[in-house]
Structure formats: structure tokens, C-alpha cells
Length: 358
Image 1 (cartoon, rainbow, N blue to C red):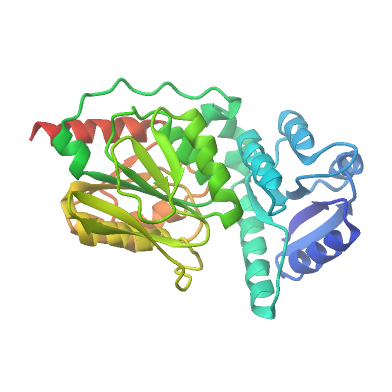
Image 2 (image 1 turned 30 degrees about the horizontal axis):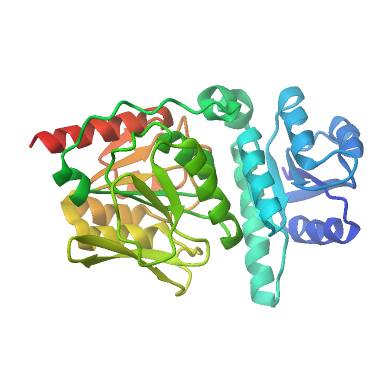
């Protein structure tokens, strides 16, 4: 049985290209295309698609407004098609908060290899959206309070010692569903917290907007790493979309380093690269957290962290948009403890308090 997809895009060229890309998979069928949300609304009723691809910016009714109405009246998995512009990234982040499953940027393939990679990414996200449809429709709104726009209150500061604040490092990795998952963890953390280093699979035109959005919602500061920053307590450093992020030990602490090397697990930045760096340099003075996402990126790196003495936690299946990366990490023995999305911050703070007392 094929996955039925409806493509909604005002560009005839883009509709044709997406139809070729998506419809070429043996397990996916493009059942229709619509040039605007008003036509799409009627086609959804008649065609009953499993997954929708939706352009962010369209005439008559923009994609964000249509998505909001769709999630209220007929919740279904939606993959947003976003431009590479700053405006496109801002609207896409809002769409993920509104209920979109995931997004891809509009194809800018300069070679056959890049087009092949884009095709595989697009098809994989449609399959993942289809597989997650029950969870998305039945429980996503209830399970993720941040979608309403009201951020969770941060925990009261446990007054960690300067020794812990200056020597411990928290490393977080996520992919599909991770923009909301990372937010749900960070908004529950106080300002006085050891440095946080993070990888979220995103294109380079999106990570700066994502960091700014997190910074506006969180008590701690959030920045996109530029390379060379000395890690400071109360600051979360997000890997930029164009580079792997690692750490370098210097007198008095650690600094970020960026590397535009080969893709790892089909990604740059890759979670494994960050986790392995933390394992090698920080050892048992670190905590590793792996959140929702497709694939296996981060599993082996988290295992190296645990083997080096770090405490590790994986998001549970019930609260994950895609239980891929956390499952892979659990399967290889990398996860010391499992927690719900809403409970991870509390588990982290309790663990840090235990460390501080020892």
C-alpha cells in the first residue's frame, strides 16, 4: 500500500519537480497537486492524502495560516517546503510550533549527487511523517505544551557551585522534531547552568534564526556558535548548519571549533562528531542527551560518552516525534536513563545536584 501525498505549491515548476522526486519512490504515490490552499482544502476532502507537502509562502492564504486551520480541523502530517531566506526560516520555525512534522528547503541542486541526496531526504521525511501520523494526530498537542506559545517556567536555580558550573558540560543532539524538543528542554533550565553544546540537523540558513528564537524564550542565553567561543555557564551554543562542532581544551576551560569536513551519517553538523569530542575531552564531567530524530546519528557518540563516564539520557518513545535516534542509542547501550520530553530537564537538574554534593 502506497503512501498518498498531496503537494501544495503555487509554482507549477515546483509542483512538477516535487511530483517527480516524490512519485519516483515505489512506496509513495502523489495523488494530486494544488496551486493554493483553497484548492488544497477541497482536494484533501476528496483524495484523503496521508501526508501533505506545503509551501511556506503562497497566494490567497499563506502556508502558515493554512497549516493552523488544518491542525485544528483535520490534523495530519505536513512537511513544509521552505525557502532559504531569513523570512523562510522564521516562518518555518513557526510552522513547526504550529504542528508541522518537519521541513525541507526548496531544491537547489547544482549536481546529480546533490539532487539524489535531496530526493532521498524528501522521501525519508515523507515516510517518517506517515509512520508518525498516529502519534501526531492523537497526542502531539497534548504532549507538547510549548506549541501554544506559552513557554514552561524554568526551574528555580539550584545554586550550583562554581566548580560544577565551570567544569561540567551538557551536550544535546536532535533531528526531526528536535526544534520543539530542544526548546522544551531549555525553557525548563535556569540561567545558572553549566555550558550547553547542541547539534540540531538544520540547513545553515536556519540555525541562526533558531538560536535567536530559543534565546528569546529561555532564561539562559542561546547563540549560534561561530568558532572560538570560550564555553561559559548559562550559555547554550548551537552548531551552525554549515559545520561540525567540536571542543578544544584551553587553559581554564574549553572553546568551540568548527569544521566543514565530510558529512557524517549524512549530516553536517553531526551529533556523533560533537558527542565524540565531548567524550574524548570532558569524560565523566559531561552529560549527554539524545532527543527525537530520524536515523542513528549520535548513538555511537553517546556510547563513547557513557563509556568515558558521562551520564546519558534518551528521550522516550511516547514523547518523541520520531523514535529513531533515541532508539538506536538505547539499542547500543548508550542510554543510562530514559525520560519523557517534559521530564528530561528535571532529571538533568537532579543529576547535577547529586554531582555537586559529591
